[in-house]
Image: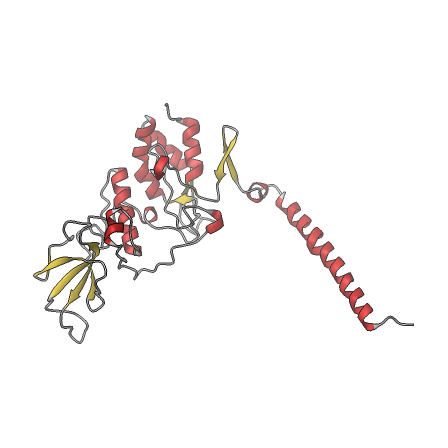
Length: 302
């Protein structure tokens, strides 16, 4: 006598559950674990952790900040590139800013918030400009870069007047510096444009009718502050910086540790990885490994 259909279906489902549990819940994880123990893979499978004085200092695969109280960068350490992941290098919040190259106009904060030091919605251009200014001041070089005002905001104007068929405004009647707010800065980055005095922007005023004009300025084509010092990676977790950014920081780190720049330079060279397979990507410096090498060889004397 055959079993009812519903019994056979339930038994088949139970057998499938037991087989899949054995294969996917036990055999597969054990196989992956076994492969991860192969020499050359074990370190990566364990998180590629790096230790200093017997304590785990971090992972060589995930960047981190080297700052002191209040978030100020520590002069004795090489600094990582910016991060948009959470409050910076948060593995649980990996992300980019999602701002594109045409994002150049800020959202101005309310005057009271601006007076309290709170910013509004910064454009990608202003983020780059402000970072370049800060890095330049920290490293003792010029932070100037194209399309950036000296105050660290995007050098962008709204030009009003009759437009021609090609979209230009040959005879402006009014010009406003969009990223510089009245009451926050004393004067615009440029006094006049095409003979018209430049005004500071006012919170709440609509400038949508103006032609948005970025102003390049006189900054060099190749700024002293490298691009990776002012832009975040797509993941926000990049543990590397470019050799150019490392070279910019070498003098400051050497001075803070009381050693010759050449000694620090040699450690940078030892910590520089070449292109993958000799042709993919760019040379890069792992910041955590470099800072640990510094602490081991040239510890800060307190």
